[in-house]
Image (tube, rainbow, N blue to C red):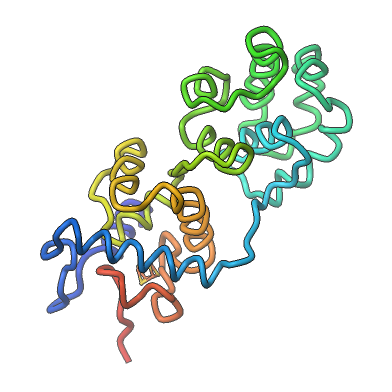
Length: 238
Ligand code: SF4
């Protein structure tokens, strides 16, 4: 079964179950979103950024490398990569072949090596070797879309941002917080119902919850702390 089909089944309201999305006013949805954010904060109180980094440049490199990869796989290759190329200047002078040799175990390594080199060149040529904080500037960098930019802004600059990856997208839809498919529209919907001070932590914890509990194929609803707030809870037959 494709992920898309399994996801549709998982989010279909159960027979006779109230679909919260149909009866909710915006105020009610805001209240429920706040309750979801509070529960996630309680469950994942001590969760830090899982990508190992010492500075904003290393975080940027790690987030670019994490596309379609596990954080653990990224953390295995970055120590040697950061030792060899500790600055944007150093990375901008690297050969693509050498970058590739450091990240060969990651998916899409050739495209990622190209993005890293180009991104480093842009940092040196256009931003004096510093990672910018503005969304409009970050998203001009190779390998950086809104999701990556929001991670950087939230974790490195303490600027609120909602990072919508595949987990955040799936959970926001299952939780009835958006009906959109497009990440930018999902970011906008979540931004309307949560205060800015919640944005970074909420999306980060939602992603973790998607990895640990609300799986794409078979969400573990019986173990989920959000089940009483979720219109898509799957009740297992006894
Ligand atoms: S109850 Fe929890 S695990 Fe189940 S669909 Fe909702 S958020 Fe996902």
